[in-house]
Amino acid sequence: MLAANDWLTIALAKGRILPPTLDLFEAAGINCDEVREESRKLIFTLEEHKLRFIMAKPTDIPTYVEYGVADLGVVGKDVLMEQDKELYELLDLGIGPCRLSVARKAGCEDFSGGYVATKYPRTAERHFQGQGKQFEVIKLHGSIELAPLLNLADVIVDLVSTGKTLVENNLVETETIAYITSRLVANPGSYQVKGGRVMDLVNRLEQVLDVNEVKPC
Ligand SMILES: Nc1ncnc2c1ncn2[C@@H]1O[C@H](COP(=O)(O)OP(=O)(O)OP(=O)(O)O)[C@@H](O)[C@H]1O
Ligand SMILES: O=P(O)(O)OC[C@H]1O[C@H](OP(=O)(O)OP(=O)(O)O)[C@H](O)[C@@H]1O
Image (cartoon, rainbow, N blue to C red):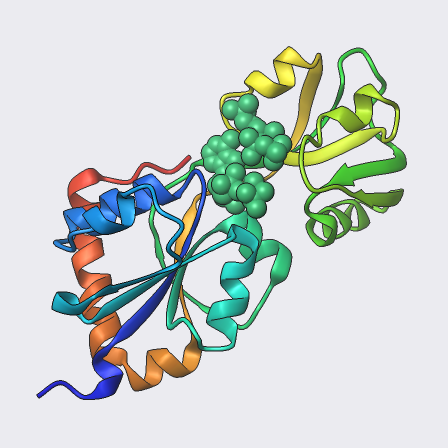
């Protein structure tokens, strides 16, 4: 008989990375139909696989995993870099490819210092401190591209994928800080105690990723 700790709880990010995450789990043999249905349910129990999915905001995923209420989580590298928690990063899932970049208004001078608007204050600080620039970070929660247009900030640090948002707002990308994809992360304690189950899932996902040949972004 399976022991209680043969159950795994996985925190999944609601939003744009949820559909490709479910695609991946399905390809690994885990039927996610119930999770895909339009619903306000936040916890899904998959008895057959002894899995529990919890649906959380992307930026909260590391917290659920850190405290061990989720054994595993799927979250963007952008969030992991910003929060820098003690989690094990087990797999690059290749989902949600984009880059974290610096951008400014087209035609403006290069950034030598000033105001930086971003959802990622710690990452931005590390970046500009490393360049020895004098700056002040303004934390925003979305539509970051507004900041330079309204002269709230000289530059932004934000995610770029197609580049459409920058182009449509007359902004230009000047530096790439990091290439981003979503990662499978583990609570270190869960990794020790539930190693067999965790590695079984990792192996299944790895096989799917091998078939799909995740390309570096
Ligand atoms: N334009 C994009 N293209 C591809 N991946 C992206 C893009 N924007 C964000 N991502 C990735 O998807 C993750 C989740 O983004 P999503 O837009 O769903 O949530 P969010 O805006 O960060 O959070 P919230 O919904 O709480 O505001 C990000 O952490 C990042 O890794
Ligand atoms: O290069 P693109 O393909 O245009 O994508 C980049 C945009 O996507 C994200 O915003 P999101 O859609 O999550 O909205 P938000 O501004 O509310 O965070 C990101 O913050 C950029 O604004």
